[in-house]
Amino acid sequence: MKRQHYDSFNEHAQSAAAVKRLKNDGSSSLVQRSHLNFDFDKICTVTLSHINIYCCLTCGKYLQGRDRNSPAFLHSVNTYHQLYLSFHNLQLYSLPENKIVKAQYFNETLDSIRFAAFPVFKSSELLEYPKRCLDIAGNSYFNGFVPLTDSLGRDFCNVILMAIGHVIPLRDWLVTKCDRDANNEFVKFLSLVTRKQWNPSLFRVSVLTDELLGYLALSEPKLLTQHDPRSFLLHILHLMASQSSELKKLVNENIQGQLEICTNKDSVTITKKRVPFKCLTLDLPSESFFKSSSTKDTINQVQLGELFKKYYGKKEKIEGDVTKVLNLVTFPNYLILHFNRFDRSNKCPIKNRNKTLVEFPTKMMLGGIKYQLIANIIHNENKEAQTLANLAQDNESVWSVQLFNRKEMQWFEFSKNQFKSKQKQLLFLDETYMQFWEKDDGGTNRM
Image 1 (cartoon, helix red, strand yellow):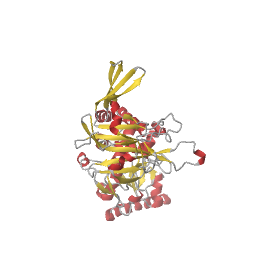
Image 2 (image 1 turned 180 degrees about the vertical axis):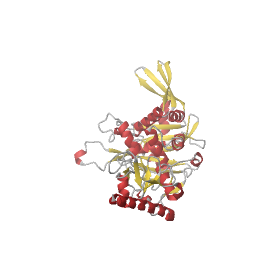
Image 3 (image 1 turned 90 degrees about the vertical axis):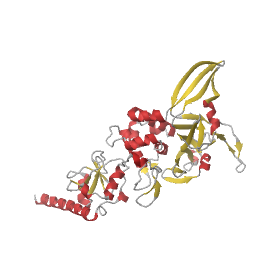
Image 4 (image 1 turned 60 degrees about the vertical axis):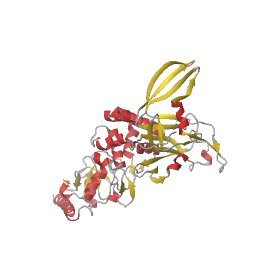
């Protein structure tokens, strides 16, 4: 009984001291923001449970429970770390006394902690973005233009998630309309990634996508084995449409276009039908167009306008004695293009890919509609891991994305957790794989 009374007294004294410190000097001695990262999967470091997880605001550990003998309780007793954030309700607690920290003790630091765990935006604020921001180390960045990475290096997923975050109608819904307590796990995790991507008060200039990709690895295991940005995008759009009626409407209104397919025989139209599309595939030519005088190597190059001809009835797809003529009839607000570089039936599709460079403007007129390029996903080949023992094996793909900041009229390139500015005149020198184009009211360059 004496021991129990002594423990109870110590616990009360510790918690009382924490409250006193909050009164006197705020949270400066209790919270170490440089140790905090709320992007990891919410798993207790002791029990490996996902249930009832808290973050110690002094050391950043994820721990379960608040009751006596729970990991969080014992951690507070053994380390004198006294402030904890609940990932369930974003409430702050003082342990080991197990008391809620009242709002009267909140300050700018504690408010920033809750905002970092779940950023909240007003619609009026979104009109000001992107804007120049600073992380806690004083590093400058534009919100919306930060690297998305994950612990397993799934860059083919992260480049798509970064691009989706710049489809404004989807972004606006995900950061303002999607509730933190949403029942659908996929939508909730996608919303959280997008919120953090546009967070103007990041602790560090990068965002981890581990929670979303971890969920997809369990619920859609085949999705993350394809290592293809196009397949990942189409599946993400399918999940949006199938798991949220609001997102389905936004996807159909903004991303979906229509093709008219005419089937002809002996110059007579047999059938005519319209089919929807969300991603338009452009086939690259295999012929060489010119030689580089500096390298003496053959460089394949083609104009983007040349690739579009097949969608204006100028090129016919022949199947036996029947021809098919394709025409673009409905142009979406966001036009997504895919450049078909890989033959997946090939033993080494990466080594033997089509390396043709596509020359493109950053503004174009298509079907009388002006478009602005906002995202350019590019492919690189990783040859560093190649040895004499695995020469017969295929190489690995490395994916990057180039994003356009309208307010600054500047391009940025993101590769894993690194980013740099990019001159628009040099964009076409990379192997473009996918592009996102947005309807624009400004000036254009005709193709």
